[in-house]
Image 1 (cartoon, rainbow, N blue to C red):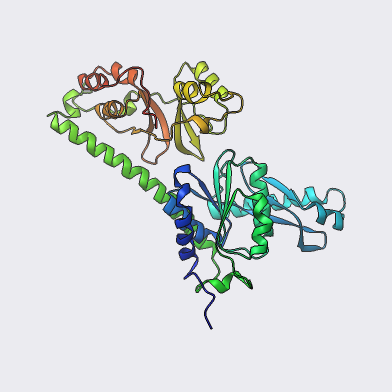
Image 2: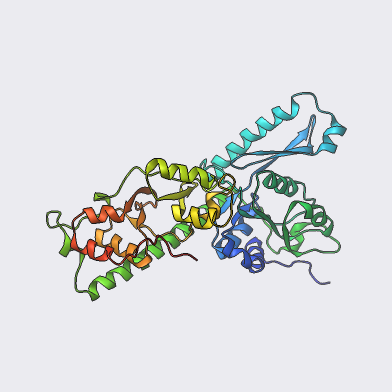
Length: 397
């Protein structure tokens, strides 16, 4: 008899899913995995798509006295959503205040689990964003349905459900809640998810934590590799010109660093705020650009030109269009310990007038502008700054 098993393990299932989902890589999706079994699958998807991996925590609201009979669910997020099964509520007819009380109790449990898995990291915002929901398989689909409905209520941009295996009937019932469903195996006689995986041992809490940390480290290392490559390229240019940052120092024989001239008080734009609010913040601060931050990470830059060209000139409403829709995602930055001439060359090479400044922990600590470099009085900085054509701000793609 031919085996029904299709995947070696959850990681294998994730890699096979990622091959089908590769077309979404350019959409900068957010991968949301349902713990615990969905995390090893989601880890592989996020790794191959170079996307952030986060958890989507769902807690069922059971009927009074019958906790296994779900009458609704609470789904985690920056704005947690309550999803109610109206028919089940009508049948059970819970006492007044029961649903609200259970909602608070389950939210407390979600907070406890988030702290255990993610050290109390806040849930990521999903409004306007392409979201890929991943689990290790679907049996009845109740939990997944609640998750999809909650994401829709939270105004996610595009919702893709990705699972290795599920019964056709369950997928048919989920069609209305997702923009696209990717399922690799839909057996005619579905019995259990585990029958389609050679290794389907239970995923431990420790494994969930390990994979989340590994995913975040991989994202940080990729950013650091890009920064090192840019630094090497700039160093090569300086050597070809026969000069180094020490030649231009006026700081007691030592090179000046970005931290010596940068502005430390930095306004940050939330990606989900409107471009009108961002423009007002720029006007109030008399600045032409704002770093865009999400979950304590730098994810883009929005300039006055972005708002004018990608927003207003494109006919978008300033009151509804978000910063995420117009921001530049190709971020050029420098580190606070970088020499001034290095920062200036980054500006010249990429035709930008200002750079976010990061510390070695990759946290935003300031911003340095062309004017800051010019005021430093170093000839190398002035020379490099002359390579920036006005009024360019970022290369548009």
